Amino acid sequence: MIGRLRGLLIEKQAPEILIEVSGLGYEVQMPLTSFYELPELNQEAIIYTHFVVREDAQLLYGFITKQERALFRLLIKTNGVGPKLALTILSGMTSAEFVACVERDDIATLVKLPGVGKKTAERLLIEMRDKLKSLMEASAGSEREFMLKTNYTPTKIVNTAEEDAIAVLLALGYKSAQASKSVSAAYKDGMTSEELIKSSLKSML
Image 1 (cartoon, rainbow, N blue to C red):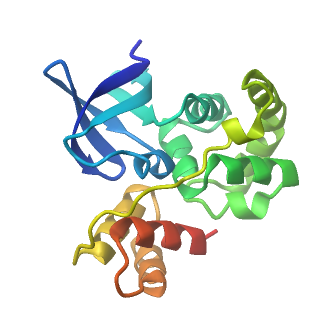
Image 2 (image 1 turned 90 degrees about the vertical axis):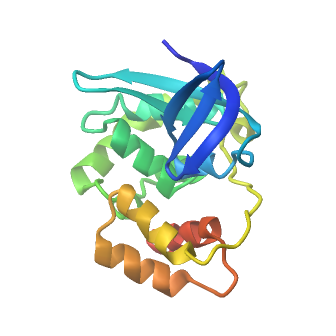
Image 3 (image 1 turned 30 degrees about the vertical axis):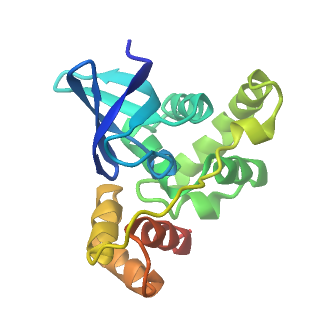
């Protein structure tokens, strides 16, 4: 089991990174809430990981905090929710927003996420309520400690911000027309790719 990686951040292409540890490069998929907490390229990064073994692949999922990884692990225990969908959920909203959805029984917001139908949303609300309570108690009862806040420093502006944003939304499962429309509506002059992705995701919830 690979539970933690500490090494040099070699590549960043949302939602995947390449981190070099002792000469070995590990490909890691991350939710956007964690991805935008990462340092710049060629700097040291520490990520908490969840290792998945399938017949056709071995996959690593990474998170900035243990709490977000714990939430990911709870999500994939829900019937009908695999690692890919759990990653999409945690990319579409912060941990705090997901907790709020569960507390409010907010099916309407959950079903706006790609891959989350009404039945899956209902199961999430039912099965996650008690699990989240236990998780937060295990985190010393501190909601602030558990609920990840996404505070990242925008990187330099690139000319392909819209293209990058659309590519990330497509990777998360959104349809091409939906991604393009959302990105075009959210784009403002001077936006970084990261800002545009966050704004586009927020507009679809």
